[in-house]
Length: 273
Image (cartoon, rainbow, N blue to C red; front, top):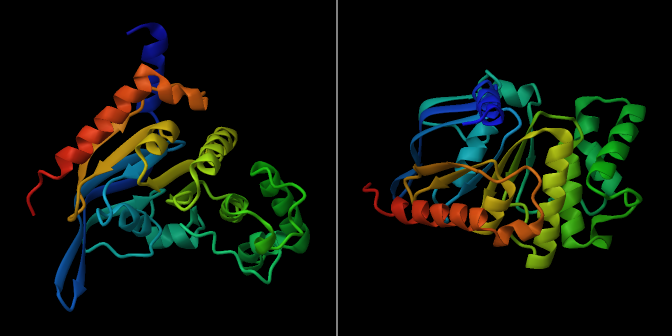
């Protein structure tokens, strides 16, 4: 390893851990019996990382994100967010959450939707206006604050949803398959924009997806999960450079990482309950 490689390894090793899961379990009790959503999940996510979670439907990807956001309660193990419990992190507004659907209120303008959490948090009107201006600029929606959701395309609505999650400047952005319902052309464009946004803000991002190319293109780390009960079958540190034009998807390095993800998905099916 050369001097540059050693320095990079040192930097990664010193990266502050913002999300830490240790032997995390979650079992839902249903009328048909227990459902084991997560089993023995241990993972560390460092500050400023872009981490994608990929696996088959029902493998616990979204459940893990919801545990981080204190929307679900683990039944075993430990989980910390910025050194706090998930509940404490929620109260301290440590994260923003972007759901699969944009979830914008149709009777509010785009600016009004973005302002909603700021109103709840008690920000002054002047501060609300300034934050809305900044986040609309970040997601390339300048000039659309006065529009209503129904006047925007699906991709623009998702960008507005991202802007709302960024408005109170949380350090962590949790994204639950935000582009899954969009067509491939729009999805590619938003992937490029999300990478640019991540580069500009330095946020720590947890991103759920079913798409191998999306996971490989976006991530510094890819967490491959097995079918229920959700376990981690592989954690892949991406060797791809920070600058990633879409054309990188045709490169040997990209194809190699994508193949390892596929192998991890296949290996996940070999676990016994």
